[in-house]
Amino acid sequence: MQPGETSNVPQTQFGYHVIKVEDRRGGETASVEEAADKIRAYLVQQKLQSEVEKLVATLRNTGDVQIFLNL
Image (spheres, rainbow, N blue to C red):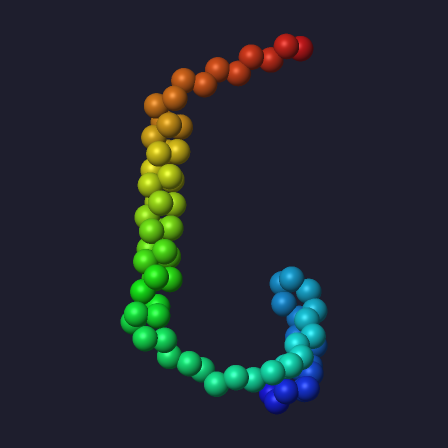
C-alpha cells in the first residue's frame, strides 16, 4: 500500500480492523555498536524473567500455605 491508502476491512479474532498507511520509510540496518545496548538489555530482561519464574515455582512448591475461612 502507498501513503494515504486505506485497506479493506479485515476481520480477525479481535474484531474488524481498518488499516491506513500514513508514511513509508526505508528499512535501516543498525550496526552492532548501535544495537548492542538494546540486545544486552533484552537478554538481561529475559534472564531476569526466567529467574523470577524459577523462584516463584520454588516458593509455590516449598511454601506452606494455609487458608482459613470464617463463615
